[in-house]
Length: 137
Image (cartoon, rainbow, N blue to C red; front, side, top):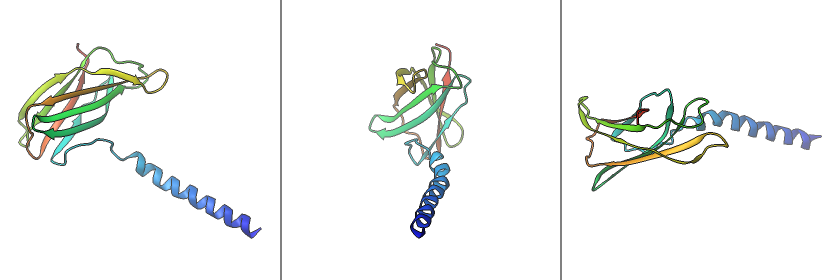
């Protein structure tokens, strides 16, 4: 009897621990970004940019990311990603666009896409990298 009671207390403690930590784990950003710049995703009716990776090197800054259809859409219409580097004073430093490509499926129906570009500039500290999906080809 005591052993069953002890087992039940251990199980309830483990379940409570998991429930307390699970909302915190879900809110952790999966972006891999530079500490000196911020990433801003502009909302779109068609796509959600889900992850962003930044890497500085001798060529400038490399920006890569993943996107997926928003809502119940299965695939994205033809389009591209607009990338802007905004300086700390609000001035536009550099703007470019890049096309995305399909890399697989999230589940049986929904597609997953990725993009990548290297911009030949190094954003100053306090800059914002703004990403936007544009549905015009």
